[in-house]
View 1 (cartoon, helix red, strand yellow):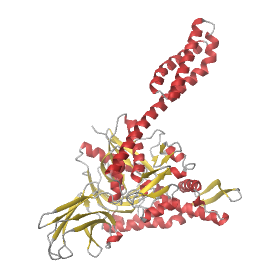
View 2 (cartoon, one colour; view 1 turned 180 degrees about the vertical axis):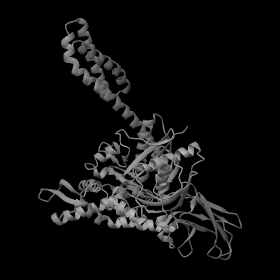
View 3 (cartoon, helix red, strand yellow; view 1 turned 45 degrees about the horizontal axis):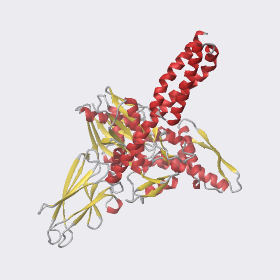
View 4 (cartoon, one colour; view 1 turned 90 degrees about the horizontal axis):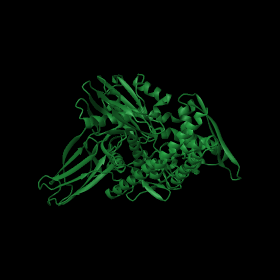
Length: 608
């Protein structure tokens, strides 16, 4: 059976899981942690670091350590969200060749899907180490409010990482799958998902026959823990500037230290009433005097700094319930997902709005990955007893004459679906029409997201409004859009598979896939070298510790002196193989080292 892994590609942390013997299980990484920081770094020597190891060196290598890449994925460089991200970023964000976002690390520019692929590849390696076999298929989660560009860019990331992404699934929907899996329940639930970078709210109906139906979904793809941290950082920076006249945001290392301290303080205030931010030697003044930052922060102050952010999530919940045509008291269970839902003020706001205490039965950091694995399991096992009916989070349509947005597929339409509408030409003797595909909720075309465009040519010459063009939109189960236009008289047809306009070309993706494969081969080789070297070092250390005692006991006989000589030879050959990083030679020597260690231990044991 094909193993399908479920990956929650998070803004702050990522998580990977599988369904094992019918039970969804989160796979721990080498350090035993169930989540891995979604951080990537490039060292001075050009070595790539991912996860905890990248996070540990972030302060000393701030300019070349990427965090929160998910907030940039599938966005155009000139978008307000990217400009906002640049204000608080310690790494360099630059414009790519397609108007997309690129990240400068050392001498090279990386696309955002490429950076995200490094995190996905780490998830793939974690799963393969656990399973002891290669993994190629995955279900990856995205925020429900991601648009088509962001979804396509996420699929590109999976492809670059060497994964066949068999489904993209919305994060709140994945959480609902994990919540309802194996339970015979009939319930209307709301999933409130406030993570590191994004906010989603989804209302679902779970039926006892295994049907999970999303009724409505909404969100904000630039609202999350990063914004809460930013409020604390701004408060610390303004206080320091008022005291010393120095803007700490101008120093990348200081900014990274502030970010770590803000995140730590925010987390501590979920359980404590007050904490202290203490950053000694944060910066030097013009007189080379070391300055320190030390400020107490109370839970009440944090809540005041972030109150409007919490209010924004509640306003979106209110609108979503209105879209679902439900009252708050009709929601039977509220599930909290994402690390930010640990904040007491967030929990109070959710309880206040829905009028019920949120469910404590799911793990906010793991439930999304578990749901992704359940969906993957259902797809490969062809589980008839589980059916997922999701919706499109944004309305889809085309730009029409006068720069208006003509909606073809309304927001919250169940997918997969297709809709057709007939339009007419707007000018006399018009022989071509440009179909501009858009996604959004505004009547004004320019306020919506451009997904793609194509031209239908070869129209017959005729007075305006007499040539009829049939436009068809199709959305697949990943929420990815295809559009076609047809001249009803001649049958002339043109279509487009909408891909991210700010994304990558197929050539670029192919090069990135090859590069990722090379890295994985090197990584596997280096891992094997490290493992064998570690074992050799352990054995050599123990042999050398026993040498004086063994020498004293056996050196008086010819046999003993010969054994000591052979032992020294094995140790020397092992050290030489270690220096050359010759895995094959070192594996051979480990056999000799193991025999020598056993012999030495036996000699010493006989005298005790």
